[in-house]
Image (tube, rainbow, N blue to C red; front, side, top):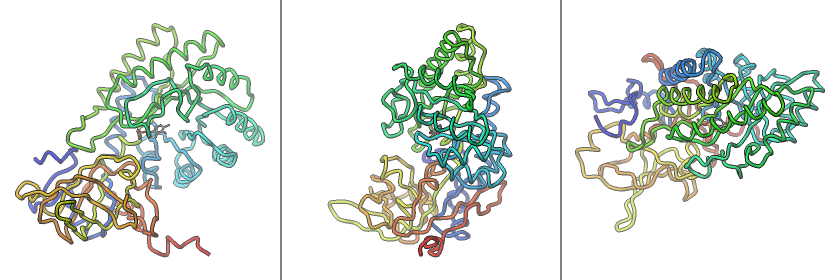
Length: 439
Ligand SMILES: *Cc1c(COP(=O)(O)O)cnc(C)c1O
């Protein structure tokens, strides 16, 4: 087994083709064209079941995982989440609309964002969203006013920052005191906003939320944030007689982009967190709240792969080699944004990676932009040439959802793989689609 097969849904078949979920990527590329997003639906369902089972065992029947749908948002994913009994996080009226449009039960939807507009709030409340996760006091006032206007009482969670640096990329670290997200416990602002929320009549405070960061491999980060949050829950009970029904511990479990990344075992880590949380609740003499977790990346990332066709291969002797593909930053901006690592493989002849001399290259896209890089310092067989099929692994999260039409490039389709079959979940865009709103 090649060490680059970093997830157990990857394999190589007898024709030396890379397979995802047991399906031949060369055949899929022939059938659907490139660039192509693939998503292994069986894997996505497995991740959902793993979270649900682990959370029920660790925290009891009231626990619920919420899929953080910004990781990959389109109609079919909400149908799958509904079927799997998950809740969902949405972060915009667009995501809320997408979920609602397929009949997702909106009482199980949580609306996030650090800056909800009046229009967002009004739209969410009239859709019957279960929860607004409130970032700050201005939002509380806006919800009080808008829910009042609709004659409703809106359930909310308050987003708090437990003051934890999850030792992760700064751009995705959100749990520290100086974050743009939430109210800090350390500065007293969390207590202030809680006291304020409890006085409002069109708001029902259901509990508290935190999310400390992303691509976290260390269970200790979750233990520390859970512990700080539980102390806060206990403090609110003592101080105001307020009993939080729900505690949302956020998302952030890491996934493997490279062979050297560790495996974050979902069951094991949730069990560890569950044991610590139960023990601390007993110590603090509070009831165990209904626990929520919000996995995004760890539900969909490893289910995903992007296929590209190789075009120009440029060698600049003494300097650099470039392998260009028929996609790039428009379908995956993550290297351009965060220098995110990825594993890249030749999908149509994987043996070349072992059999031949390798060259170092930058794999670049076709946008008119020097920063249009998918990955630098990639090892590719010397013989890589126009027409080869190149796979980027672990692209299920934050690729399609972050894609753009830069250079008026139509977005690739999303093809789902389920039970040995494949089907289109999002159609390939056409140039007409890209011009749809032009007058
Ligand atoms: C992005 C986000 C998540 C999901 O994070 P992952 O790293 O994808 O698991 C969960 N909760 C909130 C509030 C988020 O913003």
